[in-house]
Image 1 (tube, rainbow, N blue to C red):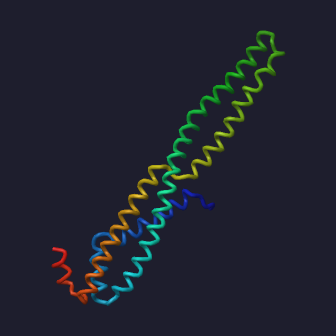
Image 2: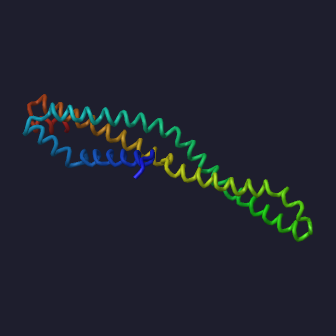
Image 3: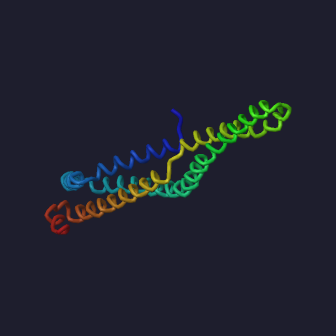
Length: 181
């Protein structure tokens, strides 16, 4: 399998979804209990810091890529508009050749050749451009990814605050519950 920007975005999205699932609902309570019971607060904080830093770097990359996806979406639209136009140019030029022959003006056929070639070659170029554009993420996908990364970073920040509290109170779960109330 070849690596494309779209495949990297997909894998990064999967990573974000996995971290999000890890930090969801009851998982946070379980993590907090493990921190209190096993005294692994500092280790967990280091891991959370590493994940958050990686996500923040990823968020910068997503932001940069998101800017360019608006341009690729515009190119997709342009390819969509030009394809039927070039197909029409090719069909009209073919019909013109037939019409010229029917009128006994076959000697003028070479004058129509550039239009036919334009239509034919243009369609091939647009097919290649479309294939290349299919390898890129679209703006909506990048927007959703940006929002998901931001949400996960916020969850990590909440986890960090909770773990700091558990470490500071020596694992006193009652104090944690009182602090949350």
